Image (cartoon, protein in one colour):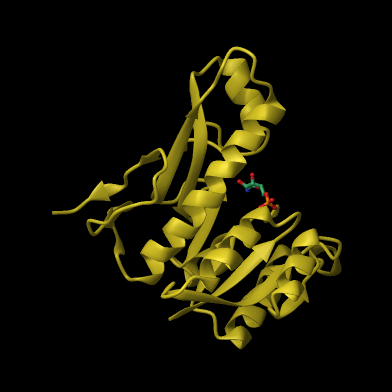
Length: 216
Ligand code: GRF
């Protein structure tokens, strides 16, 4: 059983998907702490409802980014978590923290990386006229939205889609692949080599997942 800490900033719908997955029988991970930099994040309520320990570590209370990241680090260490999931965490993590937790921080991003890193991804997808969008679960590196990719899922963009309809479609996929990705990692079926994720052969829920590389 792998102990996980989740860091959020907002609504926490991905957190909810992870909470629900962890309640399933034989799920190989359990959430030991939810940390938010935003004291008003609804995700904190979701965690409390499920009896999960919460903590607010507000970045505005720290003058230096380094001190904020050290506080996060300490809190996660205290929780005993061995892995971190960022779930709608709206701060950028850098250098020492990311290095300390190398290949042990997962993030979900609402685009098919490496396309549309950063914010406003669906607006930019529409502007670019691409035919597909989706989401990516990846390990966090110091390169923004640039770490090794664990899982991706796609959906098509229709003529009358708006940023809102796309956000909703993609969010639904996020809720499916984030638990799948955590399951893969927590069951030890993921390894990273040369910045790419290799996974043991596995089956996924019935969703339009672009499989990760399958090693023989
Ligand atoms: C999601 O779209 C996620 O991809 C992005 O932030 C959003 C968070 O939503 N990183 P929620 O807080 O999980 O509902």
